[in-house]
Length: 274
Image 1 (cartoon, rainbow, N blue to C red):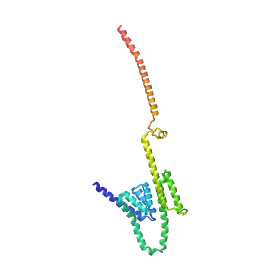
Image 2 (cartoon, rainbow, N blue to C red; image 1 turned 120 degrees about the vertical axis):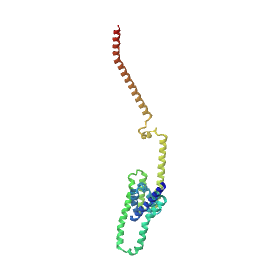
Image 3 (cartoon, helix red, strand yellow; image 1 turned 30 degrees about the vertical axis):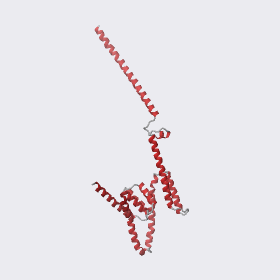
Image 4 (cartoon, one colour; image 1 turned 180 degrees about the vertical axis):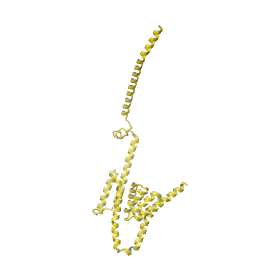
């Protein structure tokens, strides 16, 4: 029964993948970068299949691997949701609308190649495509609001500088070297960061309270040092001695208050006997 339920869920996810990416491929114009913002809104915000952070990582990987970025991103998302078959379904669904539209346009293009209306439509679509690409850039740049690692900002500034210089032909620099270089820097930075965190964790495990100044400053508020423990013990012992002395004084006073009555009753008894 459980296996049948899991199988139904799996095929339902495949249908959802096919329909979602078919819609993305059908309604998005302007190529892969224009599809990124639409893809993120559908799979990250509406479907909740992935997070925005995961979408950013998928785009980075899709850009760094050969092929169209939209197709690569579809493949990665499909693989995450439903494995190999999910990757295949998502890839085919995202490509199918484009294939059908291109085949249809190629059959009719000769009849409308010199049409002024087609030229005007192309001019309008250029602006829309530029806006979609800019929207994708802004959405992917949201992570910078909470980014505090200097290495990420350094990579961003260096990559943008080299890209702009290459775009305006100030320097002859291929973008593939930017991608490969940033991959190497990211790998080295992450390796060092993981090693430093492991070393800090091991030091905390060996000396959880901390005897040096740094650990003393950063130790939890509920952990007391030896001096603080000794001082608290002295205060408690002093309070205990003070309480015992007060109790003794009270007992003595009570006895003094009781003695005259006892003496008077004793004298009255002796007098009566006499």
